Image (cartoon, rainbow, N blue to C red; front, side, top):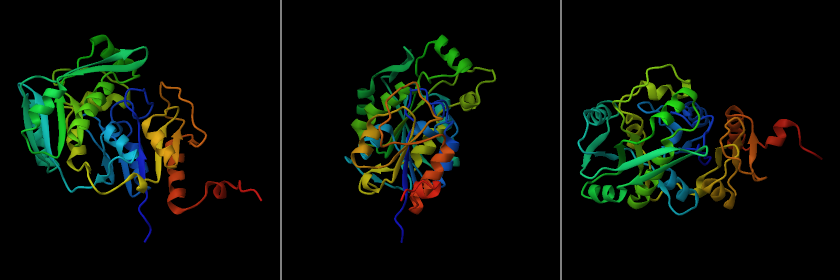
Length: 322
């Protein structure tokens, strides 16, 4: 019996990825790459599209800092049938949050409970010098408050303060998502403390921008709670425990000119890394010579199929030398 073929797909938040840097616009990529592997390990930014999440059935929805630790060999990931999800929301809990929880119960079949935070989690996002930035306060109080609950995964549904001019510029002109970075920062701080799956959804039920936007942003325009994608992802998100390890990973697929902890971890244990040129970012990190450079995700999928079947790229391209 052949071993499973496992792929990690990353699109880091707040660096202006052409694909996956907006609102769930990497779902088609996830579906494509998911079709050529047994398990596709990805982080929420790849598939979260406000109230839409079309990740493939074989996707493992893993918070970014947990994914980093997994690739560094510090933890393993345990596949589950379902998780008990706790939603942490600032007081008073809005009807949108309650309805989103009810909708997840009735459509996904999820087990969901809501925790009302007496002291709010405060998040501020923005753009400085072409990079996403943000601050989080009250996260320690949140961790303490939810300690009285029994749950497997945490969804956070709280507002993010972003100036009106920055939001308007993003909706009209695209570019870097101004709240993605602070969401990732909050999730990382809380996930490190809890050691459980965590994802954040912005609470903005009264915001409406009634204009036609870049298709990559359209999911945000259509959404109401912004929470459903998170609940769908967390429903079967793997837990930290015995199971899949970094030794089981066959390849990492990444945007171009982007090098960080996941790449360094994979290079250390000689996991192949495919970098996709078409998915540019605002970064300009030098590409290590070990990276496999491809033009687009269609080509990346071809490379993965070759890896899965044990076919060398040289033999396909007629470049083998005597």
